[in-house]
Image (spheres, rainbow, N blue to C red):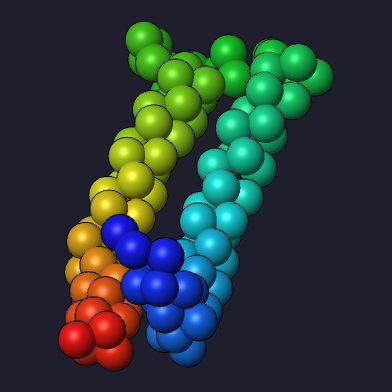
Length: 106
Protein backbone atom coordinates (compact mmCIF):
# COMPACT_ATOMS: atom_id res chain seq x y z
CA UNK A 1 0.00 0.00 0.00
CA UNK A 2 1.40 3.37 -0.96
CA UNK A 3 2.23 5.99 1.60
CA UNK A 4 -0.18 8.45 -0.02
CA UNK A 5 -3.05 5.94 0.11
CA UNK A 6 -2.25 5.15 3.72
CA UNK A 7 -2.31 8.86 4.64
CA UNK A 8 -5.63 9.36 2.83
CA UNK A 9 -7.13 6.46 4.74
CA UNK A 10 -5.87 7.68 8.11
CA UNK A 11 -7.17 11.19 7.53
CA UNK A 12 -10.60 9.99 6.36
CA UNK A 13 -13.32 10.94 8.89
CA UNK A 14 -14.82 7.45 8.68
CA UNK A 15 -11.45 6.00 9.72
CA UNK A 16 -11.68 7.94 12.97
CA UNK A 17 -15.24 6.68 13.38
CA UNK A 18 -14.10 3.08 12.74
CA UNK A 19 -11.26 3.32 15.25
CA UNK A 20 -13.52 4.87 17.87
CA UNK A 21 -16.36 2.36 17.44
CA UNK A 22 -14.08 -0.67 17.31
CA UNK A 23 -12.04 0.45 20.31
CA UNK A 24 -15.10 1.25 22.43
CA UNK A 25 -16.72 -2.08 21.57
CA UNK A 26 -13.54 -4.09 22.19
CA UNK A 27 -12.86 -2.36 25.53
CA UNK A 28 -16.46 -2.89 26.63
CA UNK A 29 -16.25 -6.61 25.88
CA UNK A 30 -12.83 -6.83 27.53
CA UNK A 31 -14.16 -5.14 30.67
CA UNK A 32 -17.11 -7.55 30.83
CA UNK A 33 -14.82 -10.56 30.49
CA UNK A 34 -12.27 -9.29 33.02
CA UNK A 35 -14.89 -8.38 35.63
CA UNK A 36 -16.61 -11.76 35.33
CA UNK A 37 -13.39 -13.78 35.23
CA UNK A 38 -11.68 -12.03 38.14
CA UNK A 39 -14.95 -11.90 40.05
CA UNK A 40 -15.13 -15.68 39.76
CA UNK A 41 -11.48 -16.03 40.82
CA UNK A 42 -12.12 -13.81 43.85
CA UNK A 43 -15.20 -15.85 44.70
CA UNK A 44 -13.10 -19.03 44.55
CA UNK A 45 -10.46 -17.43 46.76
CA UNK A 46 -12.72 -15.91 49.40
CA UNK A 47 -15.98 -17.90 49.34
CA UNK A 48 -15.20 -21.39 48.03
CA UNK A 49 -17.95 -22.89 50.18
CA UNK A 50 -20.55 -20.90 48.22
CA UNK A 51 -19.39 -22.50 44.99
CA UNK A 52 -19.39 -25.97 46.48
CA UNK A 53 -23.09 -25.93 47.32
CA UNK A 54 -25.15 -28.42 45.30
CA UNK A 55 -27.82 -26.93 43.04
CA UNK A 56 -30.49 -29.07 44.65
CA UNK A 57 -30.66 -31.79 47.26
CA UNK A 58 -28.81 -34.82 45.89
CA UNK A 59 -27.64 -32.97 42.77
CA UNK A 60 -24.24 -33.86 41.32
CA UNK A 61 -23.78 -30.32 40.06
CA UNK A 62 -22.61 -27.46 42.22
CA UNK A 63 -23.19 -23.74 41.97
CA UNK A 64 -19.56 -23.25 40.93
CA UNK A 65 -19.81 -25.67 38.01
CA UNK A 66 -22.97 -24.00 36.72
CA UNK A 67 -21.51 -20.49 37.09
CA UNK A 68 -18.35 -21.49 35.24
CA UNK A 69 -20.33 -23.21 32.49
CA UNK A 70 -22.47 -20.08 32.08
CA UNK A 71 -19.36 -17.91 31.96
CA UNK A 72 -17.80 -20.18 29.33
CA UNK A 73 -20.93 -19.95 27.18
CA UNK A 74 -21.13 -16.17 27.69
CA UNK A 75 -17.50 -15.74 26.60
CA UNK A 76 -18.26 -17.66 23.40
CA UNK A 77 -21.34 -15.50 22.81
CA UNK A 78 -19.31 -12.31 23.33
CA UNK A 79 -16.71 -13.58 20.88
CA UNK A 80 -19.44 -14.35 18.34
CA UNK A 81 -20.88 -10.85 18.83
CA UNK A 82 -17.48 -9.29 18.18
CA UNK A 83 -16.88 -11.42 15.08
CA UNK A 84 -20.36 -10.64 13.74
CA UNK A 85 -19.94 -6.91 14.23
CA UNK A 86 -16.40 -6.99 12.83
CA UNK A 87 -17.55 -8.86 9.73
CA UNK A 88 -20.50 -6.57 9.09
CA UNK A 89 -20.22 -3.02 10.41
CA UNK A 90 -16.45 -2.72 10.82
CA UNK A 91 -15.60 -4.40 7.50
CA UNK A 92 -18.16 -2.26 5.66
CA UNK A 93 -16.64 0.91 7.09
CA UNK A 94 -13.17 -0.36 6.25
CA UNK A 95 -14.11 -1.07 2.63
CA UNK A 96 -15.72 2.34 2.31
CA UNK A 97 -12.58 4.04 3.62
CA UNK A 98 -10.37 2.10 1.19
CA UNK A 99 -12.71 2.80 -1.74
CA UNK A 100 -12.78 6.55 -0.96
CA UNK A 101 -9.02 6.70 -0.50
CA UNK A 102 -8.41 4.91 -3.82
CA UNK A 103 -10.75 7.31 -5.64
CA UNK A 104 -8.60 10.21 -4.52
CA UNK A 105 -5.45 8.66 -6.05
CA UNK A 106 -6.83 7.79 -9.48
